[in-house]
Amino acid sequence: MIEIERINKYYGQLHVLNDVSLTIGDGEIVSILGPSGAGKSTLLQICGTLDRPDSGRVLYDGVEVSALKDRKLSEFRNRHIGFIFQFHELLPEFSAEENVAIPAMIGGESRKVSLSKARALLGRLGLSERLNHRPSELSGGEKQRVAIARSLINDPRIVLADEPTGSLDSRNRDEIQRIIAELNEERRQTFLIVTHDATLAEISHRIIRMSDGSIVTL
Ligand code: ADP
Ligand code: MG
Image 1 (cartoon, rainbow, N blue to C red):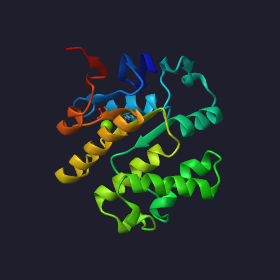
Image 2: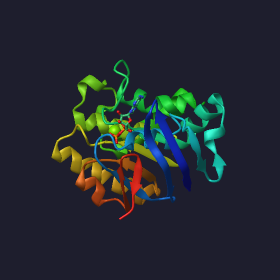
Image 3: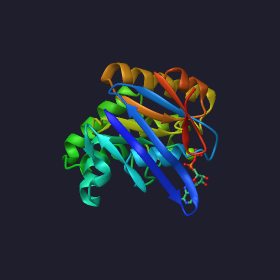
Image 4: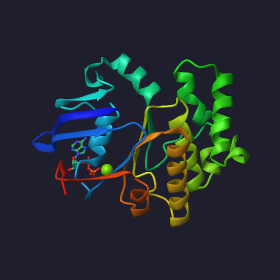
């Protein structure tokens, strides 16, 4: 269970998040919708501990992660939070399996075990023929599937996704939608997704709308 309590965030004079509270239960798929500039990405970054709020708390199972020091926080993030970004953010000089394995190695797992876990995940995502390809040798949909595998390598509590289908065509959007729904079923994986994509919103258990830094209650 993840709790966001009365988060405020300012960029200079700009009040980007205005007293935002949100609870996400285990195994939920929650989508955040809202116009550009509403504060969705900022909220996701704060949920993911990549950014700190100016006030308010972020709790994972009652533990206030917003209070952890940088080193502890990086460890926590590596173990418990997966990220998928709009533009995959894969490392160009590494193969697909290495890209997926890297967060496991950072977490202290051996290279051998990390790569074997990475291969199993890539196989699950239909990429067993692409293990040694570099990102430049993969299609957009394939790169995004590698990014999904990477987000899952440490069996995170939650996967945070910012417009994960935003740069894909409709066929690949459908594919990513199907994969997220299946991973949620199979692994009870929790997802928090910022999206404009109606099909992604379709598989969500709950849709949250944001406007001008606040959650809009319907
Ligand atoms: P969304 O993802 O909903 O489009 P963002 O969270 O990216 O919205 O941004 C919310 C507001 O905060 C926007 O007005 C944006 O320009 C501003 N903003 C975001 N990041 C920064 C930053 N690092 N510095 C200054 N302003 C920012
Ligand atoms: Mg955004």
